[in-house]
Image (cartoon, rainbow, N blue to C red; front, top):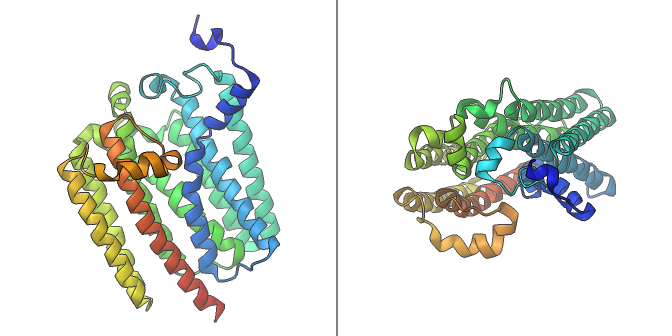
Length: 336
């Protein structure tokens, strides 16, 4: 008899397990992109109505959309999690497979329903964009984990799927919430897409052992830790450089120096990490363990732990630049 079948779980623990399978630490990842899309519109007003709209779209993409991607991944990755993360709700016996499936169905349908309602409320092309963005994200979240496609089996399909749902679609949806799509969004959304791709490549460090055993072709499995760091760093640095060039062409000259300064600091960390994939940025350990640990998670895999430490600095540098540029462009639209 399985552990899942024998273990008695209290009602409170069951609720906690349902929440844990939605992986709350991942919800916040979409908010900076939603905030950027809203800010660049220059049309959001400081009213309860507009704040509630922003809250609604955050709930749709965050706890519901991102939560669905995490819960459905746990459902289809049960055997893999028995190796990689045996304390997760299903392999630990705190949720049955049926309960996990119903969790996924509930959040998926709620997210889709909210997408339809918000789309109908906004109306026209803008409303259609919002509905299509959440619908495409939910479909990608499902085929990312579910057979027969199971996009996560190969890094060439898994990383773009995550990049679209986390870094691309939220920009368009939040911008459409308050205005017609601004031309700059067609450039900023792809940059955020590629940044998300670069980071998801490194996030695969946490499951490298299980990936090897199950035949999943993560980049780390195929080319090793140091080369994976190198590929990701090249993408990240190119994003910063293209971003700086765009900011220059938009005439936001003071922000160009901020962007290049962020790139310089990133490269310093990258060199240390490439030389020592397990402990190159260990001086940031306190920031992760005691400061941001509860927000981004922790890991027993040395390379993944190092990535989390690097991610704190990279995300702060990139997202601050994102929001400052979006805000500056939004002010221009406010003033016509």
